[in-house]
Amino acid sequence: MPKYFYFKICGYYLYFTSHCVVECMHAHASDSKLTESGSAKFFIKRNGDAVLQERGLLTDREINRIKAFIKDNYKAMYITWREKSDNGFYGD
Image 1 (cartoon, rainbow, N blue to C red):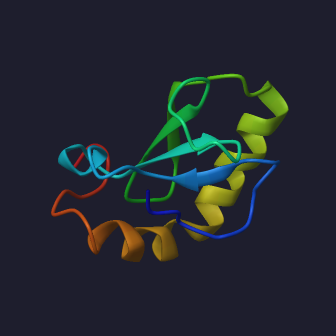
Image 2 (cartoon, rainbow, N blue to C red; image 1 turned 120 degrees about the horizontal axis):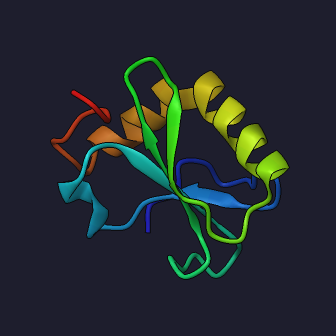
């Protein structure tokens, strides 16, 4: 599973799976197990805004902090995404 970064944000890794690349750009937020069960899922727009699809076990505070992190880092994340997927941002 490709991670966008090798460090955690609010205690969660941001990643996607090889099965995910058929969708538009998004990030799962999960603990060290990197399982979709209990993870949150954020679709990422061209301007860096993140749309929460599944909240998983995350609190509102964690979700807001992760959204802010994605907004600040979505361009770097997109480079990693494009290495594995031909699909673009959410809403394109």
